[in-house]
Length: 402
Image 1 (spheres, rainbow, N blue to C red):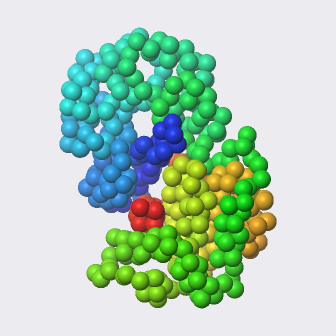
Image 2: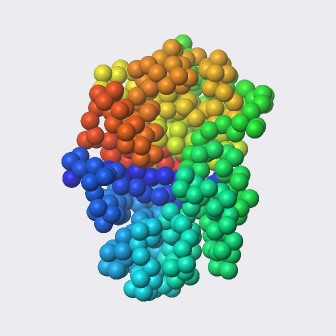
Image 3: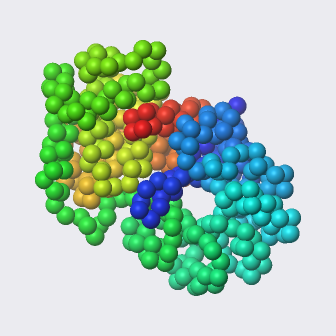
């Protein structure tokens, strides 16, 4: 049976990836809403650790996983490596002595305990005493309320995680309150307070991006670009010799790599590297997310009437976060790049035949069920292969970005 899961990044105060929360998304025959908490958690653990492999899903970074009271009392967390999971105690788990004792034992064994969707009540003090991380949902509690709660918690040795941080201002405010971790899509949007003229070095990269993206770009031009950049050549060889291609013999020259991949894949690879360089001062997860969105969009396009346009859908995913990478508007970026009308309409107005593919990928990852269903209907695709496409896209991104 196909199990659908997704991941949401958790960043630290330096906007570097700390870990992921793994989230259940249902199956072909059941939805998220119809699944019990026990079913959701056991499905996520089974898929992540037994079926897919945690190295593929999270790059062996810590994964926050929800646990119900029943699963805690069954000692289920002890079955998984303490370095790879954060035991997230759900908000509806009562702080009974048996639950507290299990959490105390987990912590003594080196597991990290997090309390989810936290709203303070004195009855929670025994659980707070054995917790490492407290998670606050910014959509459930105001910053004023959170600040008062932090004052009450000051006697404990805790770290705080802000969930659903949707803009840079909220990130700054929670930083000032002393939060250590941040979950949300604030880093996927331009920092409006910083929007300014793009610096000359990045303009050169954008111009090169436009050149590589032109339909008239020849294989000879692409070879010249790679051979003139040692770093680019190294990244190409690392990519083509990664586990993604399952090669038996190693490719050791740029010429061999170009022959093996072909002009289309070489062009795509250079675009991905250029986008990575454009985002050097941004969270690494921003580029990783763009590559996942691009690859999954391409895989979705292959399953529908847009099969012959999969390259453009791939570019849509890659370019969708350029405004955040450059802290500028998407309008100004589209003015500089050689893009067709369908790509421009999808990037600027979220309209046109390509738009549902990006919307589907984004809503799937964000657990936006209505958005996901609407995009699936518009794109004309069912849920059967979504999870495998998502896993393949993650694997592709890891192979490209390391």
